[in-house]
Amino acid sequence: WLSALESTKWLQHLSVLLKSALLVVHAVDRDQRPVLVHCSDGWDRTPQIVALAKLLLDPYYRTTEGFQVLVEMEWLDFGHKFADRCGHGENSDDLNERCPVFLQWLDCVHQLQRQFPCSFEFNEAFLV
Figure: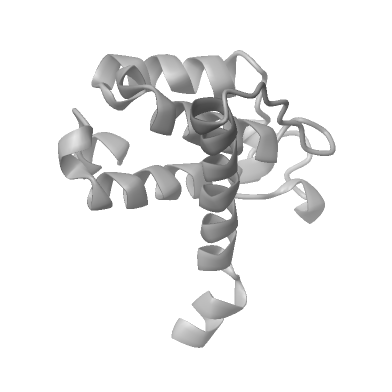
């Protein structure tokens, strides 16, 4: 089971996402530079990185209300393809459309929340 999990490279993906968000945070906060984040199509990596960076930069997004605003702003308003990515949409047979993008992001949030529980107004139960 563990080797099957490792073969998904799940933890490597999370690591890359967190490192990318930190690059954005350092550029904005430390270096006072503007940042443009855009993956090849703007649907998947873009909201992951931007939403993580906002979560790290602004404590408002670590409140219950702020987190809800963040999900709405970065995921819903930008039209993330939840149905396609979860395999419930019109293209549910197309495996190329499936990707646990939102779940990866939630796992990153969970990892941050576990490391810095006092920095978040919500806990693991809220994420579930």
